[in-house]
Amino acid sequence: MDSAYLIECGTLLLRWLHLVVGIAWIGSSFYFVWLDNHLRVPTDPDLKEKGVTGEIWAVHGGGFYNPQKYAVAPKKLPDELHWFKWESYSTWMTGFFLVGTLYYSQAATYMVDPAVSSLTPGQAVLVGLATLVGGWLFYDGLCRLFIKRSQLVFGVIYFAFVVGVAYVLTHLLSGRAAYLHVGAMIATTMSANVFFWIIPGQKKVVAALARGETPDPVHGQRGKQRSVHNNYLTLPVLFCMISNHYAFTYTNAHAWLVLALIFFAAVLIRHFFNLRHKGVFRWQLPAAALVVLLGTFAWIAPAQSKVATGQAPTLAEIQPIIAQRCAVCHSEKPSLMPSAPAGVLLDTPERIHALAPRIVLQAVQLKAMPLGNATHMTDAERAKIAAWALAGAR
Image (cartoon, rainbow, N blue to C red; front, side, top):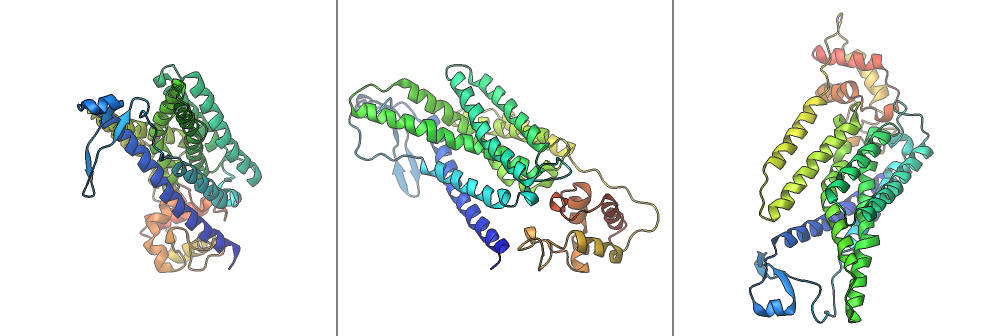
């Protein structure tokens, strides 16, 4: 087996595992936010005597559940406590190895775009790694500064920082790599919150209680602050993780602004659900998010190519261009890839004809393909493809 095929197998397994553990992390995170917002003050005097400040009854899978939350902790700590940490750690580790396998080891293909900047593959990798580290350091410093200050102001400043990072990355890396690294930066911050603050703070609280001492309330304040931040950051991260499938977003001349608008809509949607869990309905929030998304899609819609004058090219004239520039990846036996990306095959006249609209969108209107223009398709060749398609793709 050649190395390209092994990389393909490795990315499949890593992506699958990353998805599984990511679902576990996000699922537990969303559940506890929902739980916190649905707790009700108990009416049972015995529960109040025990220090229970909130409870809820739920039914799931044929069973009844009665979660309870203590003001601080029960008078006697249980022998076994369940910690929610490995979901976060494993999500970050699998994500980092996936980025390393797919992007860093193949930076010339996935991270470098000569039309964007003149970075070498090594420099592009360093930019990616610096983004992960620098993003956490800025966020962590901002959190320390705003631990007892307005979280709304914090959110505005951090949002501006993320947009600034997106602007810089879209002028250094390929569009898809820029979007991915904005998401990876935020995901690194979320997991670092768990690793450096939330779990250590919880352990210090448990240790203090075991010694019969009153825990320092700052641990709860920090944990709450960063848990809330993680909740709002989840949807933007998820978009970045799927964005490589939608070239019309990251190939735009103002890709950084496109990402900012989509992030803004995602935060509005998350805020709607957080309020809804508390019984507050603000339907204007998802409505505004929908307006932002639809407006963004209308704004970045690719311009329709104009019909060229003169004799329209024939398929026989187009096929050599496709064979030289596209089929090296998109064929049953590609030479640049272990298998055809997205299963798109362009190695026969029939397949080229059937996929003409997709070829025009990706190669002509968006210029997203060839990836990083690795096969050096010229503007004249793109125009020729457009003329052929507009004349009926005959």
